[in-house]
Amino acid sequence: MKAEQISIFLENRSGRLEEVTRVLAEAGISIRALSLADTSDFGILRLIVSDHEKAKVALKENGFTVGRNAVVAVEVPDAPGGLHSILKLLCAGGINVEYMYAFVHQCEKSAVIIVRFDRTDQAIELLQKNNIPIIPGEKLYSI
Image 1 (tube, rainbow, N blue to C red):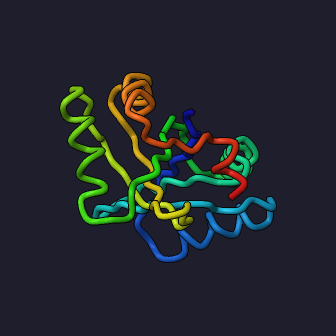
Image 2: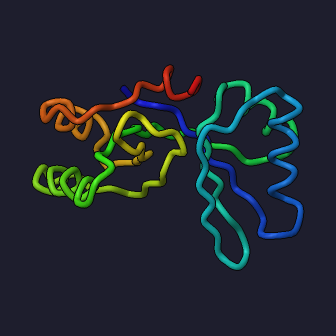
């Protein structure tokens, strides 16, 4: 039920993001979802890609600092309060959301959110127990 996300440390300077996308394009890797957070000096680019192992190798070979994290792709009802109902459930279970970002694919009448939890296994168990759809990594990478 978990998905692999790669995180890339980027100096906050012109052209650095383009270098990442060039390396991935040359390696034949598709970007499925991304989030970029920055400060004045550096940024963290978080990516869901079609092949995280191949992406990690290609990026490291080109001088990037790359990490991997387990995240969860959660289907959220595309209606007012849809995200709130899931966050309320997680809060009641004592699970913290460290960060989240949207995924561009629409599933039926749901949006897809990529979430990093402080207790991922417990979050998955709670979501499944409450019939909240989770998109497995294998499906996510190929959408």
